[in-house]
Image (cartoon, rainbow, N blue to C red; front, side, top):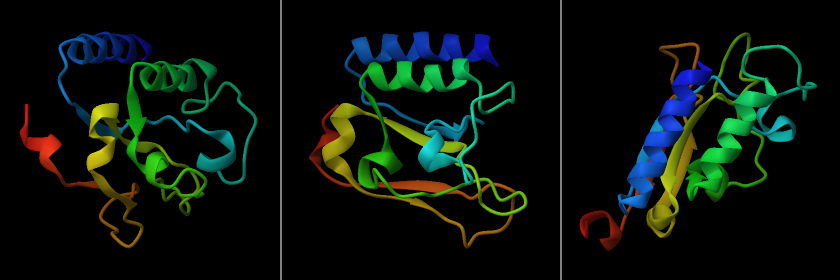
Length: 133
């Protein structure tokens, strides 16, 4: 997982350097912010999704001019995407290039949809920025 994440980060840096607006989404299996993305909050320990190296990867991605679309719209909302046994961890993300932030109308976690043990996530974008590149 760590090798994949590092390769992905390298690729995202290259695309950002080319000025490409990017939307990256998926189940990253990382609970980034302990106080908002895990209920009840747990100490970082040797557990997949809670490793310091994993959360540091998200920090590195954000430092490369990417934004967590949900946190950009709802910076202090406790919200979760993993439903085992109930929604208690946020492991699924949509990251967007900073340049797309003015286009973000909303970002949601769809807890009402139940076809998986993960809740779907979405982002709604509008504006001229989407069509200029």
